[in-house]
Image (cartoon, rainbow, N blue to C red; front, side, top):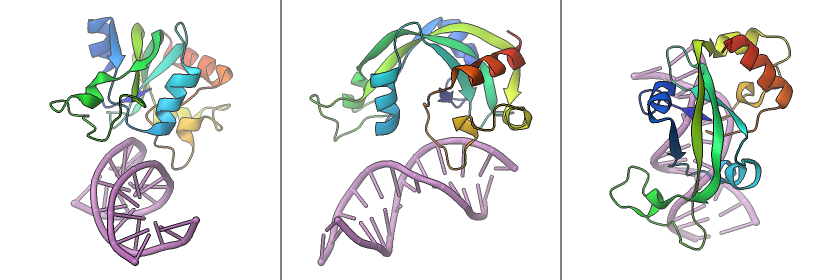
Length: 146
DNA sequence: GCCAACGTTGGC
DNA sequence: GCCAACGTTGGC
């Protein structure tokens, strides 16, 4: 799961302990939340446009997808005037697990054997949420040293 | 700030 | 359904 640290960082999640991951307005990302992200699943927390960009820590899905009410709130940054109650945007609840001592940078990910097929490293991949292979997850977790 | 690689919108 | 224009993401 990607977030710009200036917007919401691993430190913010550590402070909050858990948070509803609202504001996702991409259908593919929404479908990942709906179909593939269940309570208990492990998450890599990625800082995009960070210094450096990379995986900043670990989290866990604490509650599966529910309607993201922020889409219906005109005062919310991610308000979607076309959002429908019958076909809502979704959010999952994410729980803090660990902050890596040092961000596993994008450059480090690219340089690591066994991660070449990781989706976040694929060309043109901009989704804010994507599935991670179990093998890739273990490698990144080990690099993070948490 | 630049720009590639998208996704979305809307005219036709 | 096509596709040009536009908006967004995110690395650099």
